[in-house]
Length: 405
Image (spheres, rainbow, N blue to C red):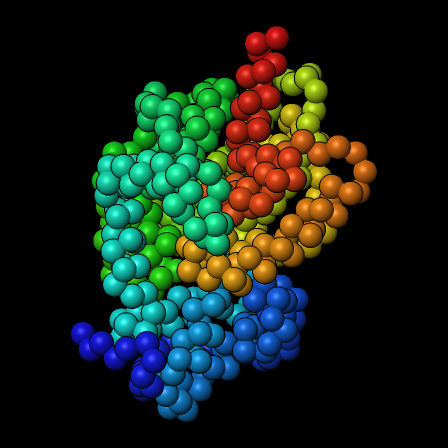
């Protein structure tokens, strides 16, 4: 593989689908929904600006230079532009394929990043590394500019299988940093009268971050491992929005009938529980007021954000934000790789949260159904006295408290 270097100009075939590339009519309806355009005001950092740059490289022979790489690397891949597009432009697919071409030619995702992504597929190593990172945080050795929320030094025991009704996908980072959410999800699955099975370590990483990084071959390897770890026909319940979106897209990523059948079994935890919310014990306790922040891959990709409101509504009063689901800036590893832009995007989200807090009545919690989003926001919201929790944590906690009374 030729290492052309990030700063050398080179002619590349991005191998983009021409029909998808030509479907954008540059109407501009995507602009208000693009977080990088909103914070920069620059056309090149918008979906239609990025598509125009792709066309230049793909169709007009424009060389890939550092500026083109910057336009592509700074996209959060939130896909907020897709629901707003009247032409149904598949921007996510175009961006993912562009990054595959750039990564294959070493224009993005340098070796140190690839090494980090490899760790995600080795769960024991990830758990040890996460504990070391948590200890480094306590010693103030982790730069504050990375915006990481406080990581757990200890985690509860792994969730233990109880039966075969559904699979409970535990993932990599989610299991390392937010394992208590798996226990809450397991409790709610049990509460609606079902059992669950947990896959082994070989199915720990879904490859979502690898997709963002353009590492297609590595993603397929991980996807095949995940598929093999959860055989059969039982639904696959996923409580991480980003992981769920990746698993639901295996039919495209892997491109086999087996992968399509697997993807059809995947369901977000909020989605699955919302369909069975009437099986939960009635709740008569104090109802907290909860702000809902929609992770992009739940709202814009899976499009099941209403399920979060249905589930939370069983125990809480939902408070909506007024920013129409604009991205928070987490974007998988984006907040670490692009901290300045991620911080500016988060500032806009926090401003919306502040408006909700000022809208009257006390607010107890903020709900976010994705680990990246929740940690990215918790890093700054803790100072405001606002706790960030997963929706299933809020519901399971409220029901457990009511039972203890």
